[in-house]
Image 1 (cartoon, rainbow, N blue to C red):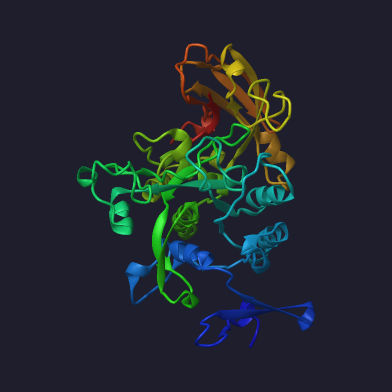
Image 2 (image 1 turned 120 degrees about the vertical axis):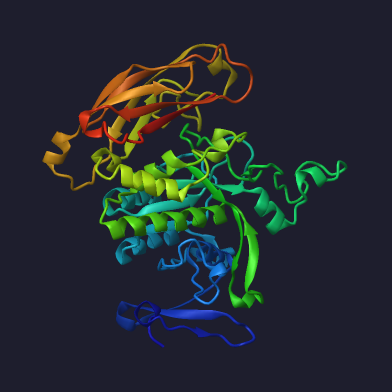
Amino acid sequence: MADFDVAREWASFGAKAALNYGLHFYDDGRTMSIVNDVGAHGTHVAAIAAAHHPDAPLLNGIAPGAQIVSLRIGDARLGSMETGTGVVRALLEAKRVGCHVLNMSYGEAAAITNSGYFVELANELVRNHGILLVGSAGNNGPALTTVGCPGGTTDGYISVGAYVSPRMASMLYSALPAAQASPAEPENSVLEVPQTTVGQNYTWSSVGPAPDGERGVSVCAPGGAIASVPLWTQQRSQLMNGTSMSSPNACGNIALLLSAQMQKGAPRSPARIRRAIEVTAKPLAGVQQLKQGHGLLQVAAANAYLDACAAIAIEDFAFDVKVTGAGDAHNGASNRMAERGIYLRQPGSIKEIQRASVRVTPRFHDKAGNDERVSFEVLAGLEAAESWITVPDTVVLLHGGNSFPVEVDPTGLAPGVHTGCVRGMDRSAAGAGAGAGGHEIIIVL
């Protein structure tokens, strides 16, 4: 049997076990690695994104034409838990084989955000190698700041929450229509599936913001599916739900967008694709912004946005945001540390006006030349989404970034969660056409 990477050959440990395996060879053939499943989760996730059943198209995934690269990060000795070495090796292998989009349906709690070697490597893959990273937001809701790492805490990731529609609730969970539910039953008694006419996030879908005030959830997508699982489970398919399922759904939709852009020969940078899906996402009525992010992913609308903005160069830029001077202290650190948003959670923080300085810096490819850096000049118009946020009208951004002040007045707000943002829109001549999607700085009280 040859290396699976070379010949796509695989075998089984026998009909009774029904466990397939493949081989990898290292060190010029001196080391052989036998690779097999340590759980059904990965197969289910891959099937949602890109299962291909030519004779039974109803079983297809979102992007059945996509080619799947399986990068195992779970360790059987740890009950399939990922390891730091495993995830780093997976990112490096994704870069080596030329992946276009990478789904990561896993995550852990993390108080320190957007930091560490793995995070640096992930952000580098997005910035320098054009790989889109999609990750599960986590299954620890509905409390605030329950998003997991890396999906909900890392700049480079598109973090996906789990949405459930009324039809999903009926078909997947045999949920009764809201009007027929027994009054004696507690609300959401059927697997905690919300009964609404428009759908909403699952109750356990993790909620933003990240501990440093960043949004935490980018978009949401269907978070349950009956999809393929390995034969050793003694069934062909299985119902699973979680942000582990919403993430590959979003990933499959992104694969469709990438395929369309590649066929047109159109630009398809990670920043451009991400902005398209966030700007065109459909907000869910009655669902808190911190749960749904920008809203439910809309692939057709995102494709139309990409077509309309194909000639706008600023769409290819993402921006780093650092906030100093406001927000609660966390992790034992000073509240003067640089954050990615403003997060006022302690009683003392909401009794007086808070002032902060926001620095916005465009991200360049590490090999970007001086001409590209020198020519970058954007007049950004600033808009506050809420009346209790005050910002200047404009800020001029050069390649090294620039800062502007923000004033937040929470003193007149009623008790409860309040979410606002500052939007930056390109007002320069180069971006005055179809309208660039801009960037948002999140403020949470």
